[in-house]
Length: 275
DNA sequence: TAGGGACCTGCC
DNA sequence: GCAGGTCCCT
Image (cartoon, rainbow, N blue to C red; front, side):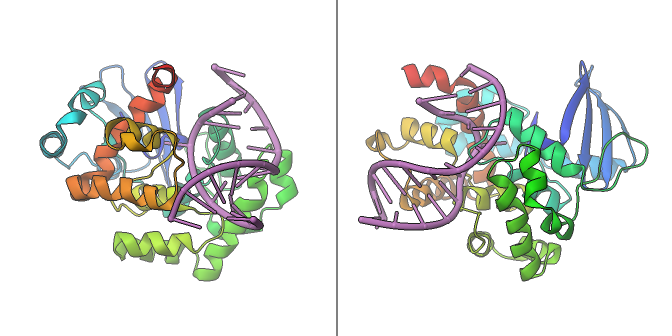
């Protein structure tokens, strides 16, 4: 189980997955989870990199459990969860630009629609994600007709703002910047708020101390860490306090640590709401 | 800085 | 009513 680039993966049949990452595609047969069978136009190295298979998960978990014992039961629900490391900054960034104020089913539809603006991949029935220059050229009415709603305006607009700043290279350069600087730079774009900036920092730029505070993590943070905030709204200040709370305790693993609470709340929020 | 409303579409 | 928010306005 991994997170970050689920948007480009689909289960084609029981336990069989087709995933796209940049110019690469992977057909994964997970019938035996201990022994994945992978067919791909990339090498094993790319697959291992994408899922950070060369990082010692047990070691990460040891640190997280020690610094955050309250997370132990949540980790037990998803002990194999990893933060993905996608290879395409543009693909990852624009997938997340489809997520705000949205539900997963429609996000997947939108990501699929966006991908059709990219070239076809060879060897598999799927598209490579379009370039940021191509996205910048997409007509708003085109996306409106495809059910993008107000995102039909914001997505090409964000692409144009990125192109103005230097395009894909600008995003790539933010990978070498420190987390806070990258986050600040992303916030200069109209249409990217603190949450999206953190998703991009964590999954596209690989700043693993980034903590995206969405509606689910907000609920979980109030429950576990900030009970005084019950009934309050998520302001910019509280947003930073939650992220800093995770960074103070987990450092570079903050992005890993927060995920267990995110997924738990995603799955169980209706139950929590009643209680 | 805090709070509230609008915003596309579709599922619950 | 609300979803893996952001903008704009008091």
